[in-house]
Image (tube, rainbow, N blue to C red; front, side, top):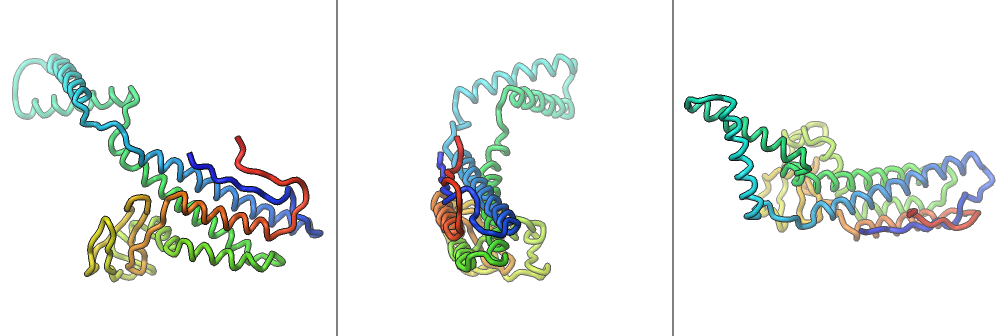
Length: 260
């Protein structure tokens, strides 16, 4: 498990304007919340991507075949004698339905669920990163905040140049799937060349894709973009968060997060 620690220089902001301090402290709490949400999403993503026992296990296949045979016999007895293609199809369908429902009730996870879990957690990481970026952008424009916050906010764009474009596609898959970009204008699909896709001439639409630990999609401008769901990305975020916290004046004892 990856745990990215945060140390706050104090407990409360040390400024005379308490109303301003209370508002800024709220923004800082939101930043920390999104940071830990990204950390949690990363751990879930790594867990979901870990190798799992093969479904092609011979013993499991034989047990499944035996149980299907038993259920089929039961269904045939219920349906009575006689044969027709229509009846055979109905028996096969009913057998599969009963077998799957039985397996699910015993805790077996559908393949579709297993396949989609890494994508769900990758998007959760993406959304937390995007929310962190937005909160820091708002905080950097608040009156009387340290001027270095503006530069720290630009560092997110430097570390994650495709963040906004990939996030916007994740929010507007229905438009991208129709080849529509910003303003619902037709996209000019640009070349894509990586370990997964080789389309030097362009024309390839990529949506909701995982290229190793990189979650990617075609962005509104037609370019393919990625955000790395990785400890390295969390390290960038951790450094920026610490610099944001250190840019303020604090009072009270230092705070260490997360908790146990």
